[in-house]
Length: 261
Length: 267
Image (cartoon, rainbow over all chains, first blue to last red; front, side):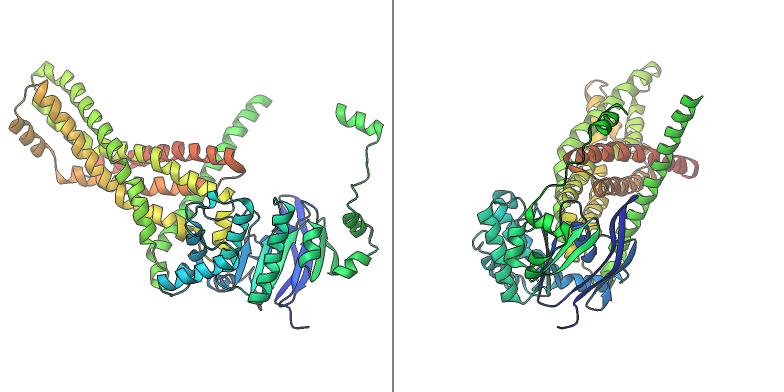
């Protein structure tokens, strides 16, 4: 296998006194789709925010293409960021702009291209996600699935090497969610991207993942292919796959004390 | 005793917080000015298009309200002055009072208060909503600096437009005085005009403009700072918007006090 495109080394972070990430080590290789899986609050979204440089860790490194973005100068970090795309959970489209302006924004700001060329590039990206003809719509006029598609078009506007997706199918009905997953796969082959997706939906994992990283309580519990995931004998992995709730820990005496205290 | 300790502890903490916020606001202002004066030389464009849009929103759209309120205030000062000066048969001095007060003090102050209510709050709400819906994060992941992208156009627009509105307010306020003088006080237009021209010095006018320029910076920075400081959904946006207006009016009046002390003792 090639050298990793993203290297995460001993990443620690906390919100106040609560530790969120407890020493994450992870390599992400070029052109693979890595899905970071875990229950709500396990730190998976926080990990993603650290990789794209939105949060600063307490300790540790995130090395993208040989640049440690936790230490890099602003100019260097911007260069890395221009080669990455991020799809936010709710799209995070700019509500004050039309869909077309949203997709064109990174091109307008970062490329010397003429407006007419940018317009053509913007239309190409919109047609790639199946939104041809929607460029003059406001984000509020689109449905949830269409918003995600538009956000995806914006994320790939600069033809990134790496695409990050935060819960790509959250809040969508199964048909639309499957459509988004399929679109991500299609874009991956069309644009030859590395994809890092965060999700808690197993259906999505089975559809897009080359490798799966299961997180629990700020640590990586499992890392491997889909087959290895299914064969794993780790009790937590099995609980997650079998969708079993946590065991009831109520005992009557403590319950009474808890209420009175 | 314990109660007192708790009370003073609480106020002390709030006071400390207030200064922490002021320090952070100053830092934000520092970053903004770096973006205005240094970044263009490093190849980062100033967003004049967005600045123009903000100038229309903050400036052109406040012309009617600034005009009406300044006219009313000019009229009010004229009436209050006339009420006192009539006793000495010196109603012609209404001209001095209205023109000097409007230019040195009330023009800049009224404009600043209206703009912080209209646009300071809008800046806080806009940026706050963008923060809540992850739009600020999206900007950052696109290698676009939120200060350069959002704050600088609003700050530039404020710095250009608020002094302009102040000039408008000065003139309309003086016109309010004229109306009372010509109707109720039965003074001759030429006499009142000459009296006004004699009373006003350039420094009265200019000190007012200097003040209004700094008020503009305060309003834009407080609004932006409160916007970036939003946490937790719609309620957070509402809170920050209110705080933006209250804090910017407070800081404007406090800055006004400092400037007036300075100008009063030196000019």
